[in-house]
Length: 387
Ligand SMILES: [Fe+2]
Image (cartoon, rainbow, N blue to C red):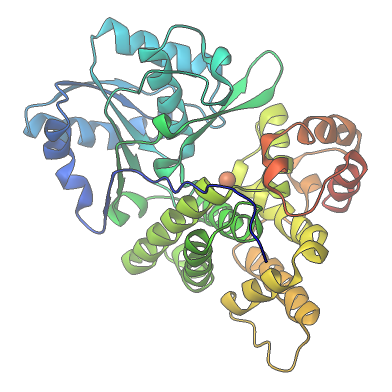
């Protein structure tokens, strides 16, 4: 078959530090990157638990000063970004460190874009909308997870339109990603489950996405295998460091896969209850994942049969379609096992919300990468089925 001309980029952070003790290299890494005054961006929870202060001390031990901004909220907003930028400028910072999950990393990406480019965060929605690189940026991950520590996207909520803006650029990728499982043992079971299912959604959506390549396929399948084996154990016992470590690798690989292949209908739909009603991203994805897979099945049955194998399903003697369907059953079972609510209704979404959710989802950038063409009616039907 003759291939049409199309170039596939592969983007990940220039340096990624994995494993127990990785975070101890923070100060030396900050110095290596030339940072003298760090803005540490985190959320209120990690600040109140004293985790942010531990990071401040780690930096101080290597002679790097820092100031903390703890205003990154779940589903971070344009207001959060502007507030963080103010602290960055007032303190003459020259480096960014994010501490947390996707909310902290995405908020930091927004701050970094505004730090070095003229304009408001809302001006930068879209692909490659700004010219100047961000300040040096280290992302310390505490969830496994959004993959945001290794991606070239930031998702920021516009507080007027209640739509999630996607800012996409190679320039937004953190300079260094740190995935130290020790930083993840404190994550409560429900959040471990939700963020782990977000990672599974990244892997599966990337595997079937339009821009998938052999590189992203390898990462996605490896991530799925690890998540199926280790997510229940990380949920069952948060102190299980091996489970945390394996999940850190899984979410990183899933992040690297979707960063380059894209995600699809599940994320397009999950973004909307997040933006409109502040519902948790991972839970929305987990609820919507089997519905999105059912929808996409006819577009790429062999790929879903591969997912089934990665999920541990014995597909011997099954047709491609039977295997694919068993894989989706396995996703439903995993979701149930780790305690994800069954439907969107369980997290407070109402049937009367569906028209607005669907109207916004059809405009979401993620629809572009989905293997099956999506209509507004498809979205309305799928939201209804997921209630
Ligand atoms: Fe996600």
